[in-house]
Image 1 (cartoon, rainbow, N blue to C red):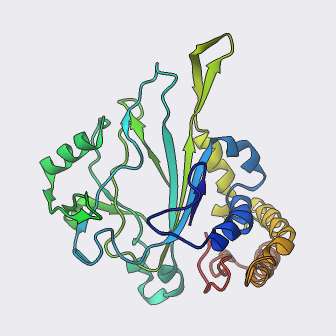
Image 2 (cartoon, rainbow, N blue to C red; image 1 turned 90 degrees about the vertical axis):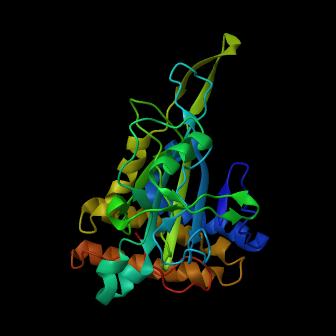
Length: 312
């Protein structure tokens, strides 16, 4: 599922129009409340897209399944950051994964908790001006396996385990489309190979361009993505025994309750949101008594008919 400005869906991974509408009208507001609380209205002008998906296999299908071969790439339309070019658009991508296996299967938790985004431990000290520049760099240091995917060249690189970093479940990551010596490079990364029972959440944020009201051909310095504020609004979720966590649960609970009539317009929608409301009520009661440090670890999915999924 994907939504945002000019992205009503994802042609590569389509969903039904009814499910798309349900996600936008019911699922998204609950996610906004959970992750950003009452700070969402202030952050919304910078938001451009949200993607929520489960990925079972790696980008190459089964060609390199289980091998240390990765479709390393950089997000978005990349380029060098031009600090004096006030008309330049650039994006910050915030992402995190929840690996359900790691949450539910205690026996193999230590092995599965790292099955999220993969990064080369050596990231260049400079930014890339184009994807061609990026692949020139990668082919200098790593063996390129090559793969044609849907008619498009998607180079894959073989990388030994000691040269990669595997992010953990729930770890919040931030990528940039543009970079320079001051900001650093764009993040080179890949999906894991293979992907486990993993739910990936992606948020794209853009800088806001500002035209000079006295000269329509001139731009004022853009309003940058408030990355620190975004992270600050997410911090109540890091400690389930803190008062801020309980306050956030109450915001989400009110949002979910208010959406029950709307959810009832979709097959299984009211039942799904009612299950979330029940879980939130139990979590709030638990947080209030500080009896459990991990009250959200087994929340049901907000998708209609969905199995229980882990929640951040």
